[in-house]
Image 1 (cartoon, rainbow, N blue to C red):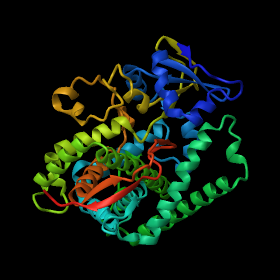
Image 2 (cartoon, helix red, strand yellow):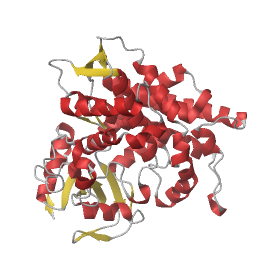
Image 3 (cartoon, rainbow, N blue to C red):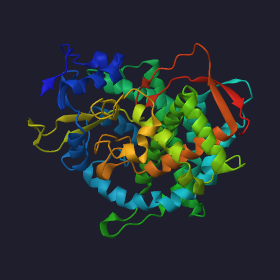
Length: 443
C-alpha cells in the first residue's frame, strides 16, 4: 500500500481535498488498490478496486458507518437510516423497506410530474433560467409533498429548500477542516448553519406532531412511516426516530436527485446527437401527451441509459467514509479497530481500467450488450450491500419522469460563455447553471 503524494505536516491532504478533491481522488487509483491519505494528522484508507469496495460495502458489521464525513453529518441528521450504526440500521431498514416498495413509489408518480410542471410552467419562453436552482426546487417540492401530503404549504417548502442549501454547503467544509476547529468559530457561515439546522428541525417536529394528532388520514410517506410496525423487538418508530428519518429523507431526497437532474440537462444540451434521440423517444412514447406516466417508464429505455450515464460521470454522492469496528485486513494491509476507510464512486467511475474513455458522455455504454462488460461493483451511485440507498427506485423514477417531462416541453440551451464546473460539497453539483429556455415544437 502506498501513501498519496503531497501530504503536509498537520494538514495532511486537506489542501488538495479542499482545492481539487475530484482531481485528487481520481488520481489515486494509479497508486494502488488501497491508498493511504491523511485527513489532517489522521490516516485514512481509500479503496480503489471494485472488488475491495464490494467487500467493504457487503460487510457493514466490520466496516460500519463512521469516519470524518459521518461525524459531521450525524449531528445534522440524527440517528436516521443514513447515519445509524449497524445494529440500529438493521431495525430501521426492516421497518422502512416496505414504505419504499415499487408499487408504493408508483403511487407518487403524479406528485412527481406535478412537481416538475409546477416549476417549469413558470418559465418564460426565451428567458434565461438557473436550471440547477430549478431542479433543486423540483426535488424539494416533490420530496416535501410525498412526505407530508397536505400538511405542508408553499412557504414551508421554500423554507426547507433554503435551509438545505445552507446545510449542505456547511457540512463539507466541516469534513475537510484539518483540525476540526473551523466549525467552532463564531463565523457568519457557522451562525447561518446553526440557524438553518434549528429552523428545519423545528419545522419537522411541528409537522410530525400535527400528523400524530391527526391520527392518519393522509396517503403520504410520513403516515406510512408513522404506522410502520415490525416483528418482535422491531416495534415502531418513536417520535424522535420519526423526526430523524424525516430529516434524513428530506436531505437525501432533495439535493442529490436535483444535482443529477441538473447534470442531465447540461449534458443533454451539450450533446446534440443525444438530445435528438432523447426527444425522439419522448415523442414516440408520450404520443402527443405533455407529461409521462409511471407506466411509460419501461419504454423510456434510452432516457434510462442517459440518466445512468449521468450518474456514472457525476454521482451525487462522490465520496463516503466507513470505520472499522474490529481489527481486520484489507488488500493485504492490517487495519486497526477505528480505522477510517474511504471509497469514492467518482474515482471508481472515472477509472479507465473499468470504463473505456471514462470522461466521454456515452449513454450507449449502458446498452444491454455493453453494460454486461462493466465489472461487478464498478458502478455504485447508490452504494451496495444492505446499506444500499433505500430511495434508489424513488429517486430514479422521479428523475426519469422529470427528464421526459422537460424533453416534451422545453429545449434548453447553454448561455454563451457560461462555464460549468463540478462543485464538490456534500453532494456533487453544477453550481449556478444558466440556460436559455425555449418551448419545444414536438416532432
